[in-house]
Length: 143
Image (cartoon, rainbow, N blue to C red; front, side, top):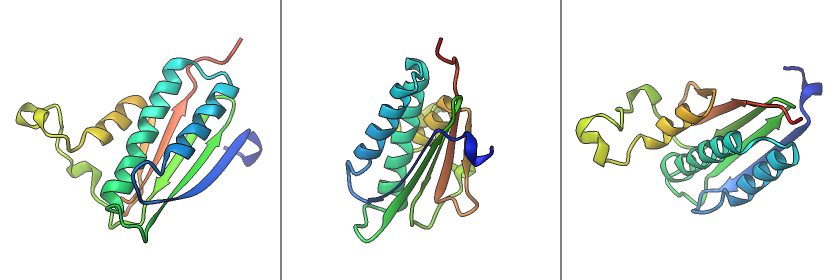
């Protein structure tokens, strides 16, 4: 997508501590509201962003105060892209067991990735496994 189509862009470096992503989440939600995204899309984006931030801070950077998480957001009239990258060692997203399968239902691991995949149109991890690109196509344009 050409750069000229983006109507909003933002980049943040956030520390690896609980709650550090709140400012980014609030900013994204404000922009979605300003551009009149519907509640269903907004809920999906909020949930996926929250899961990506928690995974980066807690699992990727292991709450290490010397590490940061980079968050880049871009929005056009009908698309939002959010990239979250931590400084951790990464992981293989394909190795995560299905959290809805049998005895795994009682275990919390893997639910964040499952929710991101369920609520976003595109979820793509980088080769190292320490970054994720979330993409959501707008369901309905405002009247």
